[in-house]
Length: 120
Image (cartoon, rainbow, N blue to C red; front, side):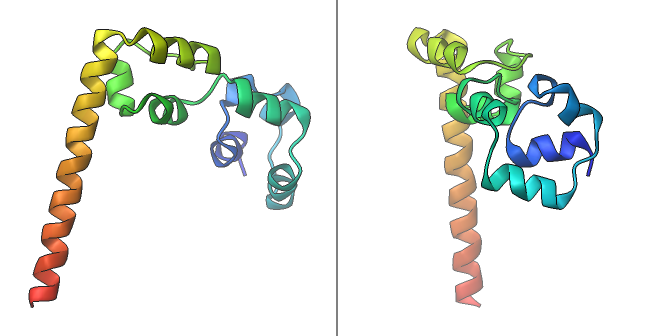
C-alpha cells in the first residue's frame, strides 16, 4: 500500500515519519508488524506528534472543518494541543459547542429512524 494509506491506518502524520517509511510501499505484513510491535519513532509520533488533523480535531473535541475555521491548518503536536485546551480561545469554545450540537442532532435523527423501523 502507499505510505499515505499506511500512515492513515497507523494514525500518524505522514510528513513526520522517517524518509524510509515515506518513500517505500508498505506491505500488509509490514503494517501488521508496525501495529503489533511499533518502533520507537512510531511510539514517539503517537505520543508527541505532530498529529494528523483527524486526531487533532478529536483531541480538541471539534470537527476538522472547525479546525480550519479556527485557523488551524497544520498538524499540531501534543504540547500545542494541550496549550489550546488550557488557553480555551473563543473559536475553540464556539466550535466545541457547534460540534456537540451537531452530534446531538445526529443522535436524535438516528433514534427517530430506529423508532420508525421498529414501528413498521
